[in-house]
Image 1 (cartoon, rainbow, N blue to C red):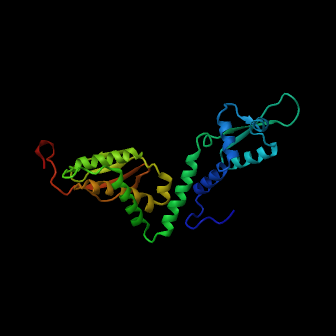
Image 2: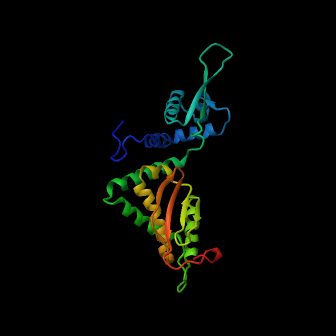
Image 3: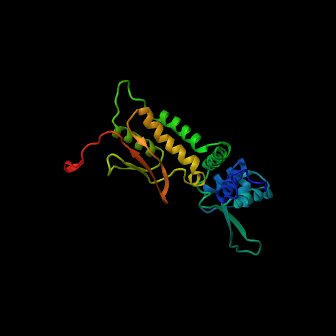
Length: 248
């Protein structure tokens, strides 16, 4: 196998992604996966030969690559007559669901890895990119409109929810609320390259609030405070409403 690209190292998940991407890049192997997903009892080589109109050895070669990628599994079936057992192929749990998304995941890994290695300051570059997208993903307020801080925060929460972060607003301290992100839709990438992925998400929030022109500061984004929790600390510099009971 050729040497891994710079910055990849021996990350087993990336090697697996590469194998899956290579396995599914073939139209024949993609067709095999479609056929196997369509039946509950699996198919043997003879059944696939009939469907694909290919030589049995060619089908076996494709099946071997799919097995190596962890997409299919084979099991011998009992025979009533003497002879070699018939092997039936079925998708693995991973193979039953993986598809075009595997290609996009592999592409995103390559691009994130490139940004991490090629940029002199990947954090700043990624945050700026996130900010540009954050500014585009929220609607500009009408001219002369003053957006209240809480309304702006609500729009950021909606934006994050739209992309699968499962955000929750903790406003126990009204002047310093926190955004609790209970799911990262790019978890594997964020673990491998937080300097890129988490900076993108930080920029996304800052860009959205910037275009809304609200008096809210996104101070940071703390990744993996818990295994499934990231926290962003906000700051509202202006005067805050009194707490219940008249407490300031």
